[in-house]
Length: 95
Ligand SMILES: [Zn+2]
Image 1 (cartoon, rainbow, N blue to C red):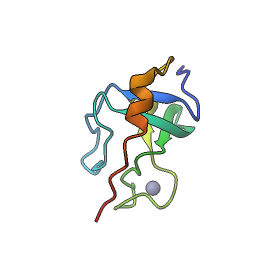
Image 2: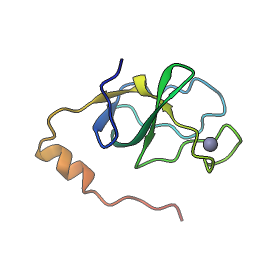
Image 3: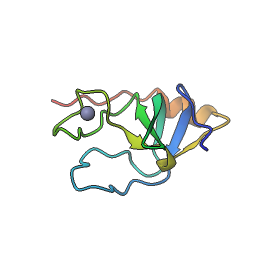
């Protein structure tokens, strides 16, 4: 069982898409914030504050039911100054 909870800082440890329709993926080694966690078919699924997943219905997720496998992430227990700096970088908007 994963100890990842909503609001946790996590690092991506697996960025290989399982399915061809998974276009939006977290970056290996990237740091993210968990927006929510759910269980789908017995497996943990998470949403991230920084990324919107590709939807199983196509395109960017608007249904709110899509996410990434919780096992793609590991919890970052002790955020240091390097992490705060990382999180304070401006978020690039799509043009
Ligand atoms: Zn969706």
